[in-house]
Image (cartoon, rainbow over all chains, first blue to last red; front, top):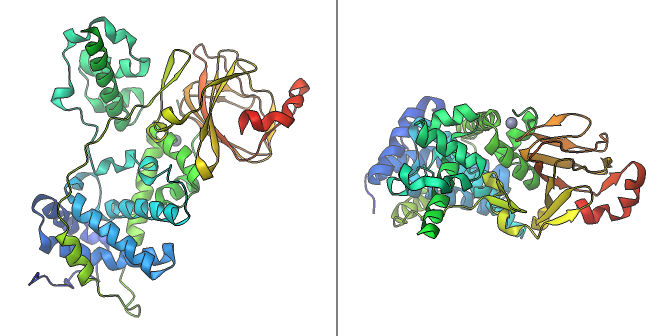
Length: 204
Length: 223
Ligand SMILES: [Zn+2]
């Protein structure tokens, strides 16, 4: 049993998230870093009841509403290490999680074929939670390896690779230059490098 | 340069998760291509989050006991982060490769075969299950869709290249909604042609010349 976790923290009811955003952010970071249960209790006590009000309005039924609260807060617990305090407020992050879960719940309920799921619809925007597109070092290749196969890349990928690996620009600079989202630069880079690797393999 | 964006109310509904799925799919793909609408969506999400989580709880509304739920959640073991599989987003047509926005990447596999239509047009239908059907349409340089109006609504997103339709010129990333009040004739004069992703909820209605003969078959073509 968890002893000593106050169910109602002194902040639970009176504060709007704008005012307690910094505080909640630091709790979330603590949960992410060290699975801090006390911090999670603070977050839970603030967000869960408000989430229930939202869920009741959206789902129109207590059981489904509580399922939405439970799934959302479980995600917060398990994915807290993906929360990036610099990219947004906890209220935004938790809202997007709840929105996506709600979307998938409603589709399941209507027996929709689940061919379109929330993760497809709100991918770029979830980058607040993860830098899944970061190119890791072992994915990178040297310029000499590129050789002539470089020319076989689709134009858009080639432009991005040229700007980054030949002109030495940062991904953000490339995004600005081509007026495309940073996420697109990252995914094009990743795809291009993968493709180049495959082509290198075929050339061996 | 993107000039045609989804309307603000649709972007908000998208951010809040309340807009119809087929429109959400179009908007998601547009947002992937459009920094402006990405910023608007992020802003709308932030506002939605504040609205949901602001304010005092209604004391008259009895809260269930959340304690068990909280304890149960904290006892769940850590899950290993799933290994993210790289997504192939390249669509191929006749030796040409097109990078699709992320929201559409899954359809690289689901497109039926490309079929060649009249007028230098190519079409690949995409089955969206109960959300209807969409099409990738590729206009070669000089390709034309006969003049038509719409019985329902037509969503179009330009994925690559440019086209015009007698009403305006559209560039990569542009998103339009056409309805029965608008008559147009899409064509592309771009050297590399133009790839669009489009959805119609009712068959097109061809309005001019010989193309009127197409009407009985328009379902086969564009729906
Ligand atoms: Zn836009």
